[in-house]
Length: 350
Image (cartoon, helix red, strand yellow):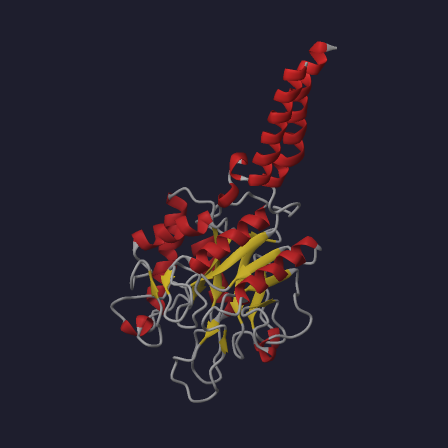
């Protein structure tokens, strides 16, 4: 009997540990780790072409400075940041293979991103976001030529890098009256095709439901939902239409509300894919890339990035860095300490 009493403190401590340790390691509870998260990425920044960092149209500044998207060190750092966020796939904005204006610069940069991803260890996958690049009136597109180029230059050479969605390489279109008229685009069995944007026919809404005239029921749709920290195109200099602004100062908690709704949809099983708008669309001020914010109330350049990381950790069911080990959780530590004290008392009395 005395031996059993002497062992009882140990059993008590173990019982407390079993009961309370999960409190410190399952912040995300029962979220499905198979939920995919993608992010919109823009490769058009070129220091030698000032229009893309033009002030005040672009009023926020990356912590990397005004960079060239084609710079290997920039690509490397972007990879590290996005990997740290547990992003699954990156949608690379692309304006075709034609040698026109700055489109060739974007095309070369996208090629380099794929090549770099292949040559270096990364968990990120990539796909093409086809933009409406033909700006002429009554624009037409040679879809077959475009599809063949994407497949031959990005899918075939990089089979372990290109992102597959519904068992095929994903090709995302950005909605446009000529590129995706009424949602009608020629199909190609080599791809899974998705249309993103704000038209009534899109599969994925680019700006979530920030503006009633850019979102249509049902939403979420196609098993997907978007999260966006802000939208502000007031510095474009357009007189008409009036600018669209949502949470310019980041004081309305828009991003948190968007993420909380997305996580709720994941819980109830209505969503299995989340898109983030965006990594680095600085002109529309949707970027979560670490940056110095011109109007945000929080002056930490990692504010939106860290918010994203916290929600991604919750989504993945991983513990937060603020309670990374058991002794940093006051509840766990307190209960175990109490068990040890009671054990000492029982030993003393025995």
